[in-house]
Picture (cartoon, helix red, strand yellow):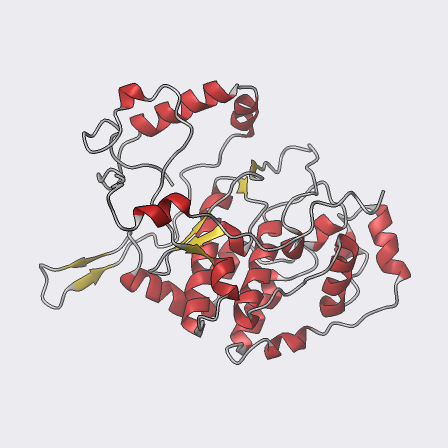
Length: 340
C-alpha cells in the first residue's frame, strides 16, 4: 500500500522536514483474519468466498511481479469493517526468478501453513508455496480451526500425509534425501481427502474441488493463482467484491438506475516482473539509503486517487489506531532442519 497524494499538504506532514522518518502510514485496517476466525462472529459462505477471492487476487498481483510472499497466514491478512482484505508483512518476501539456480531457505512460512516441499527441505521452490498456504487458510475459514496443527515440522508433514496419502517418489522430487527416507520408511497411507467435505455445513463439492487443487502434495500439480481464480466456487465472491466493495469499479449516478461500471481488469497484474538484480542492489544499501529511496519513490509517484492520507489526532478512533496491532497465532519458533 502506498501513501497517496503529497506529503507537503498543510493538513499533513511537511515533506521538507522528513529527514529521519521511521514509518510509512497506511489506512487503518481494524482487524485481521486470525482474529476473525477465532472470534464468535458468524462467518457465512459469502464471507469465505469474498475473503478467499481477495487473498488470491492480491497474490496474483504479487506473483505477476515475481514476488513470493512466503508467509501467507491469517495474521498477515488485514481486514477492515467492510470486509476489505489486504496482504501485509513482507518480511520474508523475495523476488523469484526461474532462470536462477540459487538455493533459497526452506525456513519460511509459519509451520501450520508451510507446504510439504518446504517441510521436506526443498531449496528450490515457486509461488506454489503461497498457494498451499491459501488452501490451508481456506479450510480454516470453513472449519474455524487450523487444518494442520502439529508440534513440529515432522509431525506437520505426517498430518499432511494422513490427509493426502503417501506421496510417490515423483511427488517428492524436490525433497532432501532424509525427508524422502522418512516417508518411505513409514507405513503406506491412503488418501482421505473425502473427509474435507465434513469441514462444515458450508463445504460444498465445489469447495472441496478447489481445496484439492490448492492442496496438492506435488507443487508442479498444485493450482496456480490464475487457475484458482478461474474456479467457479469464487464466481460469487468476485461478483460481490466488484459490485459493492472494490475501488476499481464505480457506480455511475448520472445514469438512471445508478449503473455499476465494472473494471475491464478485475484481477490486475503488475506491469512487469521485478528484476532479481534490483533486490540484490537493495540488499547492498544501508538503512538510511533505503529510507531515502523509499521517500523519493513515494513523493515522486503519481497519485492514483488524488486523496492524501491524513491523521486526525482529535478523532475518537485515534486512540485505538495508535495502539492497534496485528494478532499472531500461537506457534513454535522456527525449527532446525530435521533432516540433516
